[in-house]
Length: 120
Image (cartoon, rainbow, N blue to C red; front, side, top):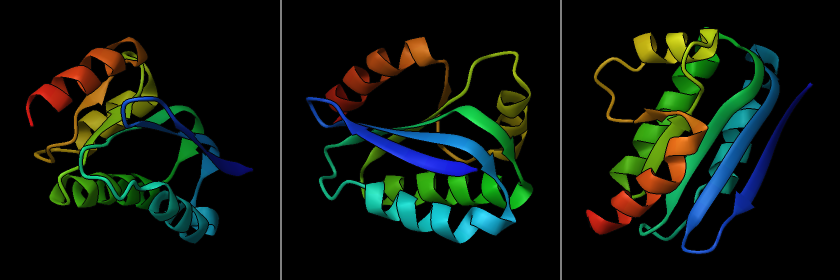
């Protein structure tokens, strides 16, 4: 099972929550749903919440990082949300390398969104 839930907060903050197992069989659907969730307004901030993913294949990791970089190229601030000490957090810390996509704990997202707006 895999699902993407999108919630738009006031002030242009968009939460994209990924649930279940992100493997090759759902990669195309994931890509399409991420594209649909991407805001048009470059003043928006997007937090991609990975905390409810039970599994993420290598291609899924790559797709999520590409999504983040594509948003940043359009001027949209984006971060990935995964709690410290989890396996998924460790995987993304290694995989993102030099990619300029912040990896945050859930409690840091609100402050990050405010700072992202100030930096513009």
